[in-house]
Length: 55
Image (cartoon, rainbow, N blue to C red; front, side, top):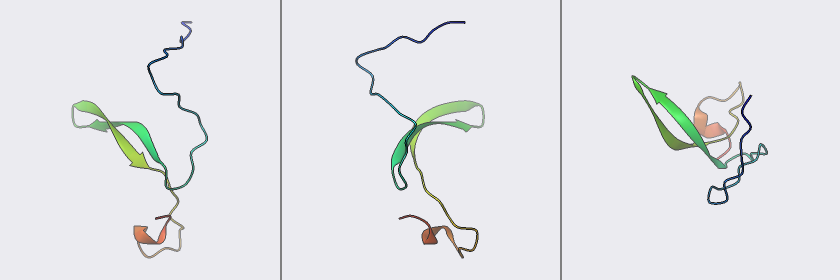
């Protein structure tokens, strides 16, 4: 198994993501992948629409 090594010019990412925080993600599309940002949050099951979740 290969071990990852520290690269000082890359930002450090951790697993603690707060609601409403933008996180980097690899987004799959038809035939290609791209990097983008997604907003982490929770939309309750009783919500009428996605705007009821975390802003």
